[in-house]
Amino acid sequence: MIPEKTRARLHTIIHEADTPSGKAFDLILLALIVISIIAVMLESVVSIQVKYGHVLSVIEWIITVFFTVEYIGRLLSVRKPLKYALSFYGIIDLLATMPGYIDLLFPGWHFLLALRAIRLLRVFRILKLVHFVGAGNLLVVALRKSRAKILVFVFTVIVLCIILGTIMYMVEGPENGFTNIPVSIYWTIVTLTTVGFGDITPATPLGQFISMVIMILGYGIIAVPTGIVTSEIVSKKNSDNNTQACPDCGTNNHTDEANFRYHCGANL
Image (tube, rainbow, N blue to C red; front, side, top):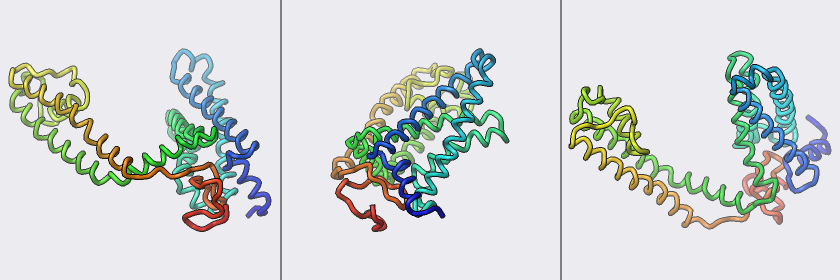
């Protein structure tokens, strides 16, 4: 355990974006995330990797060590570190740190450092774009409330793809590229969601007609989940959100006027 005064100071710097020190820390963090992502991208280019691979590796490890220290600091700066570790941002922070160490055991996994891009979501909180934060929270709530409807919709689409894929296999057959039902179902899914599977095209008039029906269905299907989520958004009032973070777990969905955390009652 660290002294309460030190913990509070650490919490202000690491979790709060309202203070000069907290904002400076988060901006440095964002800059390092961008540098790390660029380094990973450049390392995937063979010519650059051959010439500057060692330099890029050193940069990645310096940033990985910084993120490791920062993650430990985040755990030490809250009264309930387990709650923070299991929160959304806590899991993302851990995932952003792990690939570098996993790469020591399984070479090639360091490219997962690109997961650090998710941490750039903090920019909305840091730059006080509270409207964006509120919109993001509203979208998450809408998706959560409509998950049952979306699951039913996805299940229906899967059943439809199985039926249409089987029909296409029967109509076209192996001679036209539909060698088996799984391949036909794959073709159906790709046709339903985009513009078709380029390596396989229906040759019979009936098959071409069915493919047109599938493509038209695709446009209609796109609108269904959009309408489901939109209806949930419209039915939910947007609430005020702020960057003020809970000292226990780091949750930051509290207004400036709030004195207590709305879940656990902890002092803010």
